[in-house]
Length: 320
Image (cartoon, rainbow, N blue to C red; front, side, top):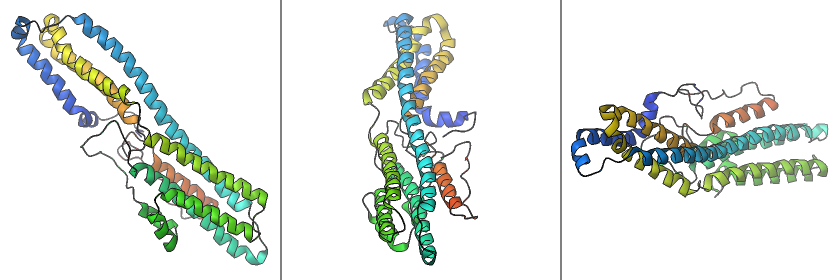
């Protein structure tokens, strides 16, 4: 997620230079071969291009609005993860009680429940960034800013045996939620938690399932392809036809003008194509790494720890 006010132009060019190069070459070729194109009748009136540009602007605005709705829903999902995580820590620490002789054992279980939840949050983030998806904007170019995404990050939060089972599970985050449920049942059997409190704690686990499921729905359901595909096609067609329609009236000034207009449409298309997939470990993503670290800090503070892990700060104006 960009947090700086200004995005460097070099970053913009990094992602869209192939299309911009094509638009510039078309404009230059049209200008220098004007007479030949005029002879064969390829210089076209400007009205059809103007109408197409107006329709494309409306189309882009609608599509980008829908893409932002996906991104914002993803951010709200992770906001719920923060809220329910704080509630989980409070419930684990206040709804469980035991005789004085068992205080140490209860405290150990509470630590286990809260540390395992921190591992669940990291596992959910890693699962969303590493699971196969169908992003619209696929590029062979390396992303300029990325975060590490490896389940080994959860190792320090889990016991060795549990980590080995966790890492071999088909769905690691879901495995940790099952283990939480088993630990709550053990606490109930020992009389450390009432049936009423157990219901509330289990409902919080259900909410974590809901958070996870809603995020996976966005991850595994691509934005309707006709929106993205035909929009990109129209941008390319418009950028190709624009020099042919404005060369006769504008002359050489058509080259920078058509290039600028093509860049505007291309940039709008690129923005929508990137934010419609918010879990791809890219600069436009929801900042899951920073949110995960915030949750971990909140959980360990609730446990009374002083040595909290540092917050994740933006890199080059980007928070991931």
